[in-house]
Image 1 (cartoon, helix red, strand yellow):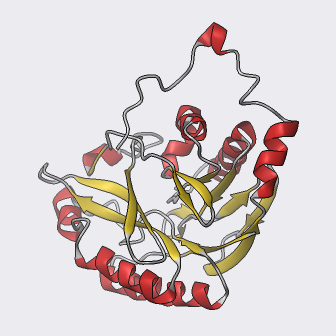
Image 2: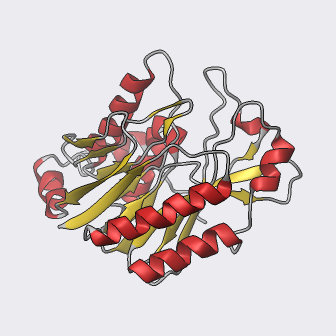
Length: 274
């Protein structure tokens, strides 16, 4: 079993307050025996629609900045893996990356993923403030299985989760800030379940709650069963992943083997990796 803590939080606009909360939750997760704590998208700060791109760029930091450094120190002290997110500085004025970080139990920054699909839909235009990433993050082995990293709107693009699975991912992590609106909870629950079921993978999807976000952080098993749905409460919840289910379900439901690549080709032949 792999014990995972999901942090469903309401990030404030104050970066220092969010960092303080993150460090407290890392300590709490360690006390509950978790091997991983997974935070949602926008952990660093909530960016209201009235915030300018230039002001958001002032909030952003480099990968070796004080926010990430503090999270790394807290992870090392607790001896726990941490999935965190930051606004990462870029070389383009007024634009930042929406970046997910995997920090291992020794405090090392083991993987970095910059969101590929920006949320330019349903009245939003993230490209006004963000730059899109340019590469997938190579899945990597951890105490909670082989991890493939996505962020929020990426869930709507099944190509990405399939590519990560073909590259070896067993657990897909998707830190999110899923915006509320018509059918949005239904969309969220459907997308998270579909990405798990079609790939025979666990999906761990911590989400923001409050502000403009729906909550409903989820863990779904490789057969599409909802292991956890946190509703709209702000809390830290623990779930155990039975990693043996991955092989068992992929053997019983061999979707990856049954693909007709002789007809439609093998995806990812020209995939760009970070």
